[in-house]
Amino acid sequence: MHIDPKKLAKLAEDYTAAWNSKSPDAVASFFAQTGGIIINNGTPWQNCEGVAAMASGFYADVPDLHLTCDAVRAAGSHVLYMWTFTGHDATTGNPLTIRGWEEWDVNDDLTVQASRGWFDSDDYARQVQGA
Image (tube, rainbow, N blue to C red; front, side):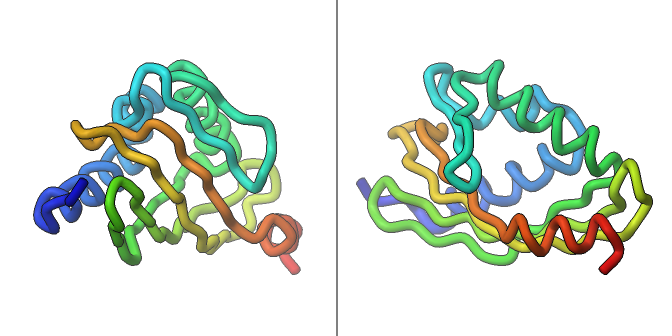
């Protein structure tokens, strides 16, 4: 499978916009119905409903979350989506700047079948505490 670079850029742009819309369903719409995501080898969120629940959790923790796409790359049906999000922790009010990425396995229609997300959870905890 070869992903057209223009379609890949559009996918990244639209996915970023979905996160910035603050709509969990908009985020989940990029996933295949049977797709899912796992973050930092934690508990997987399965299907679109699970992905929406994951996004809802991020919005609850960081209500002013703003995502930017730092880079996107493809190799066959595998995509690397690198991101930074900023915002403030809902409990402490401390500012956050978190960098990470998602590794996607995409279907022919460019929906995400599987996503493995990564970020530095220790750094996240330090920023939440204001350290």
